[in-house]
Each structure stands twice: as C-alpha cells, then as structure tokens.
Image 1 (cartoon, rainbow, N blue to C red):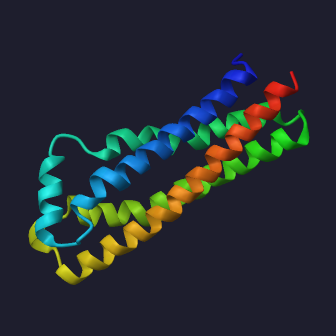
Image 2 (image 1 turned 90 degrees about the horizontal axis):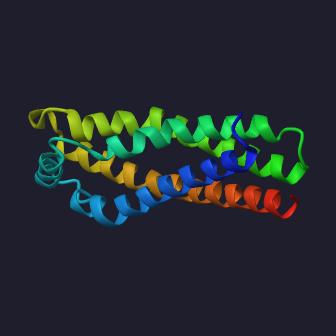
Length: 160
C-alpha cells in the first residue's frame, strides 16, 4: 500500500506541475495568440504541429483529481484539518476538470483544430477573450488547490 506521506506529496506535486504549467502558458504561449487574430492563432497552431500543451496537461487534468481522491480516502480517519484540506483540494480538482471539459475543450477544438477556413474572426476573438479570462480563474483555483495540498502535508508532517 502507498504511504500517506507519499500520497500527500503526490497530490502537492501534481498541483505544483499543473500550476507551473499554466503560469508558463500564461507567460510564454498565450501572448502568441491572445490578439485573437486569425494569423496569430494560425501561426501558433503551426508551431505546435507535432505536439501541443495538451500532451503536458492531460495527465495533470486527469491525475490530480484521481490522486486527490485516493488521498482523501486515505485520510478520512485522520485529524479534521487534514481531511478538510484534502477535501477542498479534491473538490477544486473536480471543478477544474469539469471547467476544462465543458468550456476549455470546446474552445480549444475551435481554436486549435478547426480548419482555418472555418474561422469567423469575430467568434475567434470572442473565444480567445473568454479562454484567457477563464484561464485566470483556473490559475486561481489551481493556486488554492496547491495551497490546501501544502497545508494538508504540513499538518500531517507536524503531527507525526
């Protein structure tokens, strides 16, 4: 059986990678297509012709709620604060998963997988603006999830 310390660290590490990936995306990737201009989105798509940020984020989108759930199940009998922190961490990971599937995936399909000939310049700008605004929300949620994971690990380690 996996130790609780390892599960708490895994939850935290997944959140750290997830958060760091979105900070990188915000600083390095998004500036290349945030104008919402067809040319900029097309150029960005061409750069990621063999791979995409999806390769990095997919294991995190799915792994974070899964590991958080296993960790939550493992701490259910412990001190209330650890259970509360991991519970919040799990709930946030599920909210982010739902947000990603319901909002970001459809927008990503239009932005990065539709034939260029199907782009409507107005719709493109609107979706880019929506994506960027909601990405700040996602980053905030990831920060809270990361913080609650830190607090859970900290509380567990000081109570050993």
